[in-house]
Length: 86
Figure 1 (cartoon, helix red, strand yellow):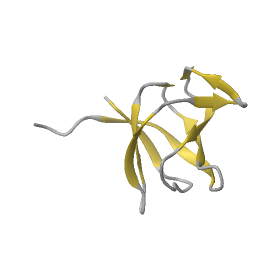
Figure 2: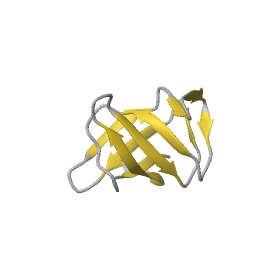
Figure 3: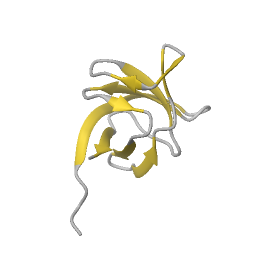
């Protein structure tokens, strides 16, 4: 079995630790239902995208150039990279 392909979709620009929400600036489209991996110097985990928001509105899909809010399972840090599993 080979490595699953990871496609970079964006970077963490902010993290709200009280509510465990990351702000991700997208460089590729992301949809609810996708599986993402968040990686950085001290971050490395995968999770399912259950919901995401733009300007406090729930959306099913976000496009490159948009910034989304995403609830994350673990602490993330600014500059961590977000990948989508292909």
